[in-house]
Image 1 (cartoon, one colour):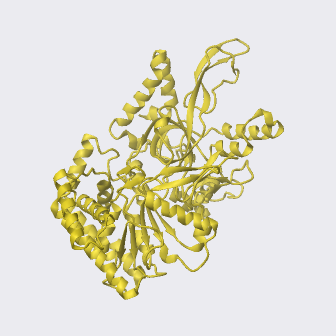
Image 2: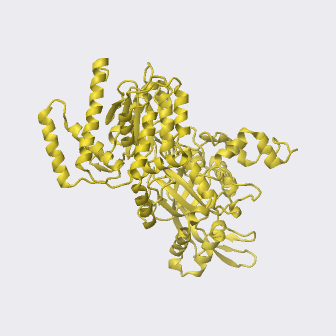
Image 3: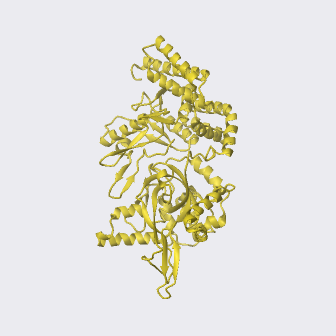
Length: 630
């Protein structure tokens, strides 16, 4: 295991030299896949999500949980090449796979005209940490890995593994940094390590590279994100991945300082001779950033993740996972009851709103019929106190329950000045990210209570339109200047507002507080401190697991529902529409799943109708009180 973790390239070369030509690449991949399956082997592979890159050994095996933010053009590399010693004419064959820089001894030169040279192709993905990933996901993943990381994987053995957050703490308290790395009498300004450049800027979008004047934009979709961006080099099946996919990649870490020198020389020479290089200086800067700031990972194994909840097995189809699922499903009922109670308290005693919030949190787009996304369930929680800290705390609670989320404050300032829609920058040949470039099943909480009087400019109008399209069609139209390209998504949108939202929604629930706490801040904070960590973890498993379950309606129940709907139309033709049927079926679907039932029963259908009747009665009542506001 130590050899695989610390010197995977050596293992690769050994296998390559001892297996017949046609099979060696396949054998290498199979070898690593098998090794990674052995007794939780994945936990001893250090993760770039947890460990800052300067603590990791170059050319060691690492893993990275990430989202594909952009895909660059394929690149060619020397898969096999030959070096020659000009003095002795001795020739050595080398393998170029999983490397950025060709290996060449001091007395050797690469023979570019050798008949042994094999040119191969690989694809580069620009990957960022999952946008809006919750702190609890990072912490639990970190603790799971921490237990099994061998000290030998640390690049500097004297330093202990620390998370990015602890690394930032060092930056905020330079005295700690000084004590740890300098001894008591060092001059901190005289000996700043390259790591300082990385960690000081990791809280924002930009990193200052010592070799380029403008700061390097890491192109994170959300402001204030932490962690590394990586250039992920994929050698096989790259067509099976697409932009916005969430991946876990295992591969060889490449942080060769030569890359930065080469790129600077390329930039200088291309300024002298434009014919030398087709790429613009801007494109080179973006596509070949210094490896110390944007490390490279040469992928041995990459898998799409169904979810990023570390409390759940990664793949639910395996036998061991089925046992986990059936055990959890057997105790589902008390978990649901506790979650309902917890959310009822959070929503100031409103149990109906809490029911709908559970249904919203387990909703997911399960299919698309033509352009219509089926299963989306955007809830507009109206009646929220204006300019109160209530909505902020509701978001904090959701953040503690779901693996990835973002709170979008719908102020005129944000609407007019934020970049929502990703767009193509042709000069740098890259996709510039935007707030709506999110991974599947991210919870997006739009806080409309922040909206004040003011004028939306052109950007603001485009942003509001993009939000509306995301909610209605579950797609974002990326801007490619001359045309737009549709990117389907699966984002759970919750809108908090005072009156009815300006944005479309599938379901409006008007909040009816049963309690008005004298101190809202204290009340909301006490909710989270009162819930046991073990109970909170059950809530997290519950919400992630139910999203992944299959669901069906038997022909018999379908017929009964249709007959029931015809009766409802007869009794109240004015107010019962096809939209009502669609919504009630959705409520019934998520109500069944929330109880762990994967088919619709008559009992659940009647309960869904009852919930809908209560919700509508509330809206009607509010209309009578406030005129036509709702």
